Amino acid sequence: ARHLLGIEQLAPAEITTLLDLAEQYVELNRRTVKHADALAGMTQINMFFEASTRTQSSFELAGKRLGADVMNMPVAQSSVKKGETLIDTALTLNAMHPDLLVVRHNMSGAVNLLASKVNCAVLNAGDGRHEHPTQALLDALTIRRAKGRLHRLTVAICGDIAHSRVARSNLLLLGKMESRLRLIGPATLMPAGARDLGCEVYEDMREGLAGADVVMMLRLQKERMDGGFIPSEREYYHRWGLDAEKLALAAPDAIVMHPGPMNRGVEIDGTIADDINRSVIQDQVEMGVAVRMAAMDLLARNLRAERGAKAVGTY
Ligand code: CP
Image (cartoon, rainbow, N blue to C red):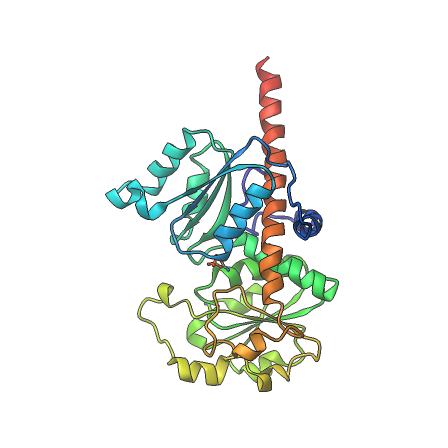
């Protein structure tokens, strides 16, 4: 494929290929000298229309470690502030011949639209409530390394499912890889039709966590809530915050995940987040760089093949 827009478009074999390549980049990233040349001579532009710590910095590091020229477009100081549209901004940058465009936007579907207008490979770094494919891939790599497999694991995703692109991409990926999925959270934060996605749905966290192998906690996405019922943080923590007592109901070797950013004392107790025997939250960050290197490496190979085929056709 030319782009990485969502997990929806990926076949299980493609997911496995990407995770296997990412394993090699995990090893590279642990060395003192971290350079490879998969993107040598290529130009990568990062366009983040929404705030980011992990995704933007890991895409930047990933591109630099693979030898690309990386430019972070400073959206806050750009002509977007003068009213220029996303598409006009993208067409402007496209005229500078980038090879890879990494885009985060608050509108679901914006990245797909943009991909149809440019000549380069586009990677979705999170679009509205729709998808965050590299997050699901790094989560899958983290789970596979901790548990040795993805199939026949019971994965509990807890919290604000309705507004979460992380949950959506994870549901798609883990479903394709034959994990057993449970969604836990207040009914008001559960998407309509959640059961139709092949998931078990729980409002009671204690029931939902029973025997789970993986516990994935999510932040309350207040920036995406439009006036619906939001429980107070105190009530939310009491009923759906992960503490030691609730975690004790999961499998004894269950791992705890969180995509970040984390609100300690709201969806997760800080002691659990920091417990290196249970929490793999820092591993998720590490896997993020490797997965993004693998994703851009594979797209660059496709781009070279596509351009090579065109050149052969031309001459
Ligand atoms: N998980 C994630 O997307 O984090 P950032 O918003 O910091 O990129």
